Image (cartoon, rainbow, N blue to C red; front, side):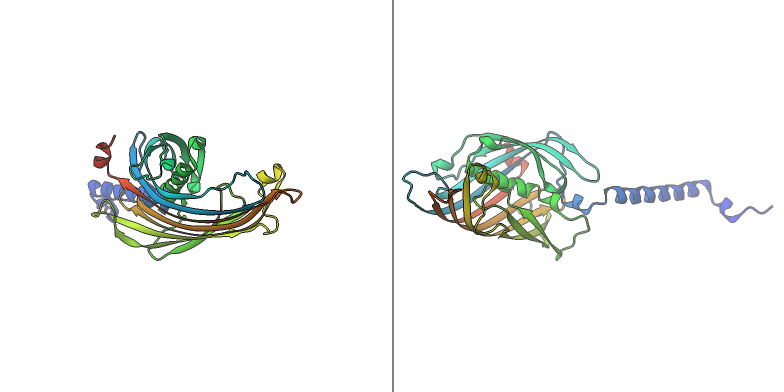
Length: 312
């Protein structure tokens, strides 16, 4: 009796075909389960891993105050160079369709701070990075000076940038838009940032020129959704205060992410903001008028492990 053709295929070859089919099936399942293209731009972190970043910047904030009150608080003028190091220790990593990270950032005094007011002691901030690049369980911010907090918030936003990328395959030249609320304390309520992110191109990485980095450009415009006649934040309203005025701003960020490690290796941010606001009692008395113009340039740079090991 003649055997069917498929039965004459050697057993080893049939097993090989089964193996190839099984491998292809596993790859397909992995692509379905973990096919979020953002994983390419997420840092490959491990529990106990330590990373070091430098942050440098310059802040120039001019404040003009008009008031009949002899002694008042409020925004202060700031001018000078800022410098800090951030030593990040990864405490826990959960992977899957998305990546969840728990970490602690130790802020160390930098060497380039010229203004003694900006020279701050070592501080620690613990936090989580969750879906969408949001920060959760942030502890320790209350121990930071305003200047330290500004540096830390800039660094944290850049480090978590990979988590904010869309759920699709990204190619150089693509761009997308979204809106985010302004989370920092402000005299003006309902401020939002309208952002446009462009995957500009691939280029040689800073720090590691032998690697390839994805270069992202983020351009943002600060918009005011509250009325200029009554722009009172809820916290001020609770203290029987009322604010009115306008706020505007522009922000540009360039971010380099390593294709090999997913780490942000460098990011630059240029910000220009101005505010014209009056704060008064709810009955319209004791008004204080502020005109604020602020310009800042911030940069964070990854420090290679060999160089980081030689630092205290």
